[in-house]
Length: 363
Image 1 (cartoon, rainbow, N blue to C red):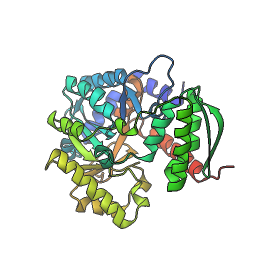
Image 2: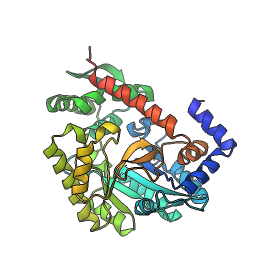
Image 3: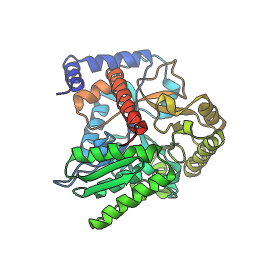
Image 4: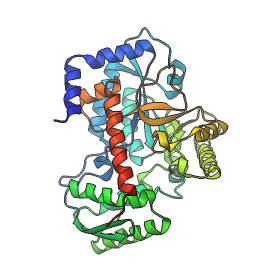
């Protein structure tokens, strides 16, 4: 058992999450939950999907259990209500919780929305503009789609940024090794390096008789997004291209943000417009980013930094709690804020590993 899991079980047994939730509500601090993919059950014997391996996927069954816990112990509120309520002490013991989804995966509409509706819950879905328009898919998700199609295949790749020699993707560990080896090229390589990588992956798929699901199908299109609005849910922008905004020139960053605002306004009209920073860490946005967001008419911006939001939290640096495939004990401890610090430390360590992998030379 991991130290984090052991802590959360002890916390649950001691009723610490309930007490923490009560105190947070009384002090005006509230959690914003962050989900990504909500997936159906894998076929027997299938390897876990890349998103699942990376902690970005929750099964429908687990999601239903988590929503049942929220219905029992909390009040689910909209993001706009959270902004109005944040910092105001409440006499209520029940905590106001916001539910958000990043990236606009198609499985959100198919799998998450029916569960949310059964519980009468509101949620906000942050969309990548180019995915909604089906003009482009972020390179990283094209990589995941291809790797998912190569389960039990033998992978050999040689590019200036990565070298994989006859890796048999026959286990979840081997698949994770392929992600670690290839992700730096996708995230930090040149356009030519990326094209070389994807040419080799596509050739491998063809040699094994595999046909990758087009990456575009991973995401909701404009019709799907309008259906969310019609069913009472909120939309937000997650940039146009899912680029790390601080790596763009000032003009390109402004164009990306304004274009993403236009996409969401076209879908939901003149409603409150929130933004979620791609990647969402401290280095993924800057004061200039915030200034552009305000110019574009955004009401707030959400990070991936772990924690609750109190009266002193800048509305353009709202914190969230990332939710994965976890049980009741850890879910309660997370929502209450008890695990914010350990999860922030774990995320910082993980991101440090990715950065080292991205900048290290490949032999």
